[in-house]
Amino acid sequence: MNALRESVIRHPRRRRRPVWAILLFVVLGSIGLFGVGFALSVLLRGQGTPVADETGVPSATSAPLPCSTTMVTPAEVLPRTSRITINVYNATKRQGLAGETAQALAARGFVVKEVANDPEGQKVAGVAEIRYGPKGAVAAQLLGFYLPGAEMVPDDRSKKVIDVVIGKEYSEVQGEAQVAAALASPSPSTSGPGCAAAELAAEASAAASSAAVVSPAPSLTPSASVAPSAE
Image (cartoon, rainbow, N blue to C red; front, side, top):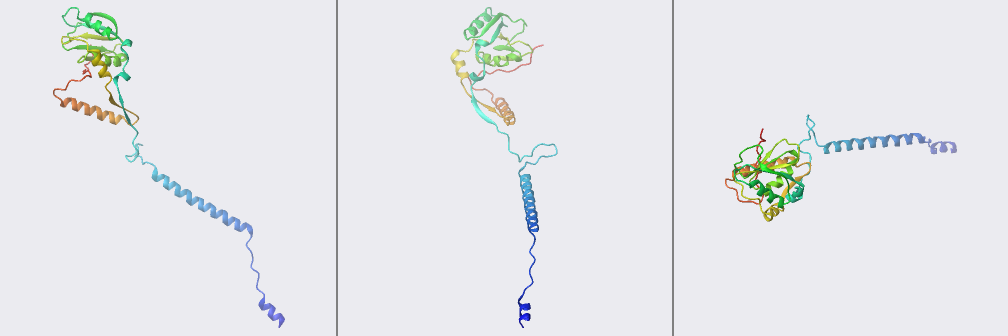
């Protein structure tokens, strides 16, 4: 009886899994979780990247480039009169007009190099012509404040010297107070990589506005038109 009871009570021993099998299971599970996480991160990153078309240009959904607008006065960007050298020529029949104009401009600080009749012998019907080369473009803008209504005439000269050719409608050089007020008047100026479209739109709007105005109101800012260079 005792032998039969002991055989009934005893249970077969369970085999324990080896340690290396448990470690292998843990390593494989970790690799699987890492792979799933990496795949999800790639999908999310792909959704946040702007889509480009076949030409390589980002689509309209990409963020626009920054463009900032600041108020700038002409006095901040234009040179001083003492750094501008000019020739003053007379294109009218009024004797001594070039000398009088040269004295007035010299009193404003301009460096006068030559005073004579117009060497090109052209007739200037307007206020004056301001002839300048690429190196004198900024200086010519400043001269326009002292000779409102003068016509800007760019040419291919290599020097910075500017020619001021007096015409029939010339009366006098603009007063210093008026010029100072115009130079101190601020105007918006855009800067930044995203300003190209904004500048084109502003130029188109300004051109449309000037074409629509029949008789513009007087302004301290000189109005000057650009004419093609004489051959």
